[in-house]
Length: 386
Image 1 (cartoon, rainbow, N blue to C red):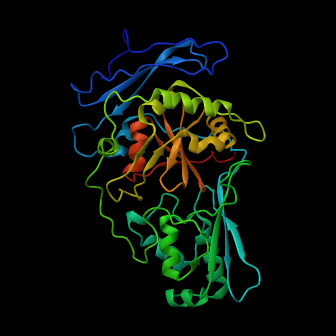
Image 2 (cartoon, rainbow, N blue to C red):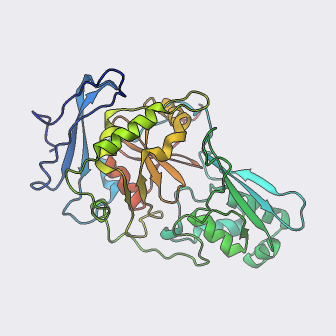
Image 3 (spheres, rainbow, N blue to C red):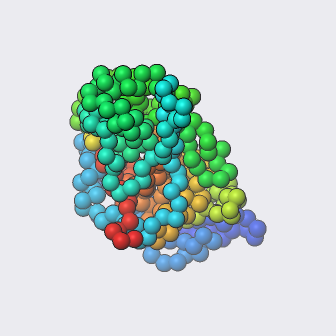
């Protein structure tokens, strides 16, 4: 059982007039040496440092000293995933692509699919993606704009085999660009192809015009054969990154809080700040966590813990937070810069990429495990009829 709150496990701090208010609470990590798990106990505070009652207790390491765990087992025993109570107002972020062919004057264009179900693809495209191993299989497999544009081209050409598909796409080129919020310097910049699309383009002989490199693990004209997850855990990733029990970078977390609280989007959107976000920033940032295996169901990915990677996502996070009836703050960015990781006041983790919104886990460790071990996240879609 997790240790309950007691004397010295949490404190509130009143801030100087005119200063940026932030929650300041202390992590109780004394049980690390004497128990197989370690907990952070937080006292709920308002944004201005006043207690509002109750506590939040979330697991910091539930696999220490044990064999590599399966994050799915924690999700099954924990709370049910949240649901979207309403449709999101926006469709950002997304990725736009253009496929050019020497024989056509106008390029085929399209954006990533955020629909509840993945789009139907040309058989050659679908078969290529289906044959990928976990090391090159992304969670949004088939939802990127590249497979859809290639499918349209092959359908128009009447291609039925891989050789026919390569012939139809001879000297074809494709480019992808980010579509982000106003004011985001990434808006309009070249977007990297995901692992799955990088392999697909190589198999079909399509030249990438994008200057951005492919996401980590992609770009090989070889079908992956990644085996089941057999080594590695969140504990190993933390240790490899230099994390130790009791680690706190409060000054860095305060700097991040100042920057986020001062930011306004061109439309006036602001970031949400709350204790769970501040404590996680202080505990884990700045840090880069990387996987040490191919992944269970999808490619394992790392995370750069730096909330300023989401500085220009205020509108997107606010939009998703309202749809979930909660608040979201940025935590960091997936390795390769293809998705933002966010946290809510209950320390649940989410991921937002160009194809949709994903729930990673009911606590920080479970959410990190989903990314680092390539477990299947829960896709957030609005209920039917909304």
